[in-house]
Length: 382
Image (cartoon, rainbow, N blue to C red; front, side):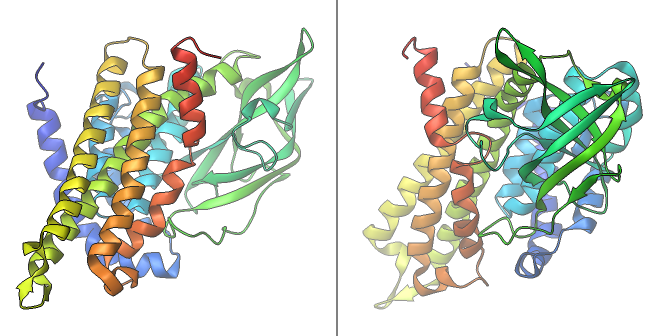
């Protein structure tokens, strides 16, 4: 079993690593503290082709694979997670529903600008009363002639209110079947009358990313804006989330590895009791444990991505990767803050930002509890 990256993947990883170090690192601290969306960085990532990595050249993408996206996310998150989640959500949640399930017309209309990073898409799944219970969707889409009329709201939606957001794909109840809700996916362009976007949330972390609540009041869109099959929206978004969990695992690994990077550097620079703190076994063991977590989590997402690319079922592996990697990110952020001592509590150091960003990784795109539930089900339990 060879885990060596291909020449193409290795070159991409190195390119994104350099971009993160030279372009993201010098500016992200101020953007983060101001809660300012990184438009310039998004434009640069678009020019690099990062938003089109897993999308075919036919629709303006790079013709790569989903693993390439994961490698890019890991390298970005080693420096900052706000930038990484903007890419992750823009691709896996914004573009992929259309790429996987959209009509040919939808793909040709929307994907080129999304793949170029000129526009961003969002995925409207979560509602205020139904986070983990996505089947409790209350937003409705009612057919009226050759239109859908959408009513309801969505919460915690990434990339939904930027100046370059072009669409949100919304899950909505479109009827009932055998007494159960029939959920479909409807594409709602930004600026459609009745579609309003709230002010940005005041968040603990990911402060330089865009997250908002959405409201739909008799929003009318063409019947042709149905994404995928009628009544298959629930199954479609489960498929999208399986892919997204591998991507979030990669992002989590990046944060976990970034904590190691910063702690190793600081352990050489910081002196106490006459020696660099890295000479003390208490610090050595703490950083060694951090490296073990990052390494193990990386293997988990590599394994899930490998099965995904081979077209094999990977739901369990995606859940394992997301669970292991998000735990690693949270644990490493806590330990890195401890290594830095009082300076770890200061926003001028990256580990303070890492600590604020890590917790959401155990919640977003499926909580740790949901991942355990999925793993248990795949083992035939419950």
